[in-house]
Amino acid sequence: MRHLLYFTAEWCHPCKRTKPIAEELNRDGVIKIQFIDVDAETDLVATYEIKSVPTFILIADGKEVKRMNGAKTREDFDDFLK
Image (cartoon, rainbow, N blue to C red):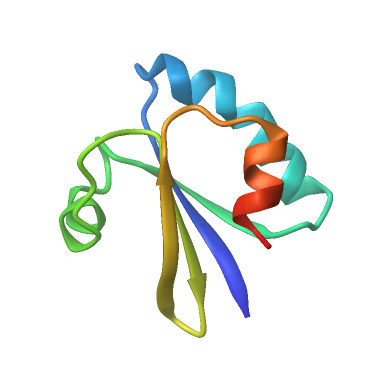
């Protein structure tokens, strides 16, 4: 099973631009997304070595498959999730 970790922050402007796209993907069942607040979940931030937000990590069978950073378009997500 695949899901997406979305590392975000309230103060992050690129996160605010990308969040509606991610919410749409999650709502439409394209992929299950776990939204992670970097300020609240510092252990996960350290575990996944998050250096910037937003960061998106695709998980399959419990392992990281790939990641991308920065504000993205719907097309970027579609390509990333292939």
